[in-house]
Length: 170
Image (cartoon, rainbow, N blue to C red; front, side):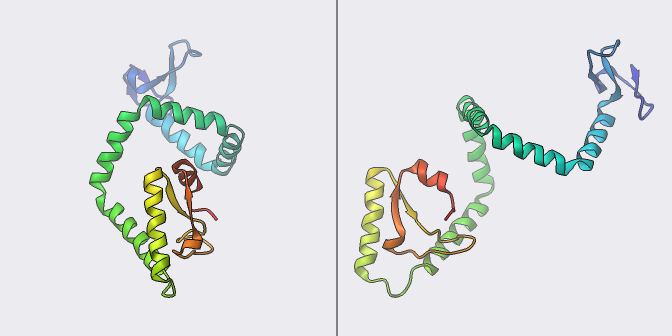
C-alpha cells in the first residue's frame, strides 16, 4: 500500500507507476492523478506539442512509413479482421460514400458526351480490369477547388499503388 502525494488516498502498489529512480520503486502519484496531470500539461502546451510532432514526422517520414509497413505485415490478419468487422457494422457509412461518388459521377457526365465516347470509356474500364490497373480521373470528380468531368479526356490508367497514393489531389 502507498499514499498518493496528490490525492492523499492510500492505494495498492498496482495503482502506481513503477519508477527506478525512487527508493520504493514506485512513483509518488497514483496513475489516476498522473493521468490528470498529463492531460492538463498537454492542454497547456498543445500547440507546441503538435508543432514538434509535425516537425518530427516531416524529418522521419521514411522511418514512420517503414514502421507502419512492418506493423501491417506483422498484424495483417488482425487488421483485416478488424476492417472486415468495421465494414459489416458500418455498412451504412460505406453505402453513403458509394452513393455520393455515384451521384458525383452522374453529375460529372455532361449531356454532350456521345455514345461513342461512352463506349470508349467502357472499353477503358475493361482494359484496366484486364491489366489489373485503375482508371483514374486526372481532375478529381470531388476535388476541393475544382471538379472534373467523367469524360474520356479526363481519364487515365494508373497502377493501383500510384492511384491510391494520389488520393483526391489535383
